[in-house]
Image (cartoon, rainbow, N blue to C red):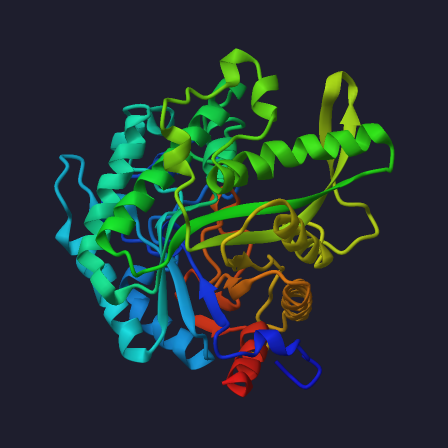
Amino acid sequence: MTKSFTLNKVLSGADFTMGVATSSFQIEGASELREPCIWDTFCQVPGAVKDSSDGRTACDHYHLWQQDIALIDELGFDAYRFSVCWPRIICADGSVNQQGLSFYLAILNELQRRGIKAYVTLYHWELPQFLEDEGGWLNRETAYAFADYARVVATAFGDKVSAYTTLNEPYCSAFLGYEIGVHAPGKVGKQYGKKAAHHLLLAHGLAMQVLTDICPDIPSGLVLNFTTYYPATQSDADKQATLLAKAHFNDWYASPALTGQYPPLLESLPAAERPVIEPGDMAIISAPMAYLGVNYYTRALVQACPGGHFEILPPADNVPVTAMNWEIYPQGLRDLLLQLHNEYDLPPLFITENGMAEDDVVQNGQVHDKVRVNYLQHHMQAVAEAMEHGVDVRGYFVWSLLDNFEWAEGYLKRFGIVHVDFDTQQRLPKQSALKLSEWLKQRR
């Protein structure tokens, strides 16, 4: 970044990938050119999205993609991680939308022309509404529909892809969408969350089979979001509560994928909350992966509650927080990577999302997002420290390239290193993008 931005040499190697990430619903727009998804429906629910907005236009990336890819190139990134919109590819009658495939093929061709690696995510939360109408992720058949969709995409994309991700953050799809209802499809009930999670993980495993069949030489894996959990005090009760929170939110997803087993938590769940696990499911879910993607934003302090329950405490008044009120805690990323390294037999890791929302303001044609510059610097340093302790991390992706539709927050929270004026769709690289670009070009 600048001379003051001194990163450990391990991130400067030619074999370490530096990229930027987006997701389809958050940036594409052009909703009229695809089937409706669960987020289109959810956005119409009064109060579901804080500013009552939707993703119909978003950043209009569908029409401005050439400009956005040129920007990635100009900034000097090695790779672009983006997601394919399932309902832009598969129609309600089961046919394939060739126009949708052509859109992504044009992007892949342009990335290839510019020498930028394409990291393709097959699912970033846009379940087609026609599948939700049949039960969505509570319906086991959705996992098989996902595998069919993966086959269509992998066959069409050929060798233009550098790496595939099956699912992005199944925790968010299952827990936020089917248990507490703050994300699409907005279902609420403890009896839903773990069941949806199991079908999501099954979908991952089935898609891994497809990718291994269609494109065995292209690395494929899963992206999980992790929070690093710490006890609020050193009491035994808080320590036990912390382990329970970790089991629910981290290990419930990592353990099946990496070991073929759910954590012991499974046995303590009420029968109504347990997933239906059919013979062979765990072998499918734990198919060998070429990499595991790690998304990290913050840590959490855990306090024990009566009855063996736990509470996640809000950040203390005296700690730095993002515009999402998430504590800025770079050490949590280092601790997380070491924890995963010590607890699991891991494939290589990628930091597939890391970044922050800041209350950015354009002043004199510039955005001075100093807090974000420091956030990225310190978190990348945390990655370098973990690597020095033996953790095999192969790349780092900033979230996000663009300010975008931030799910239930609407357009109120800005995570981009590039500012977007949603009225004019003008793009403006923030200071964070310019500092990163400076460092990336020195690195090259």
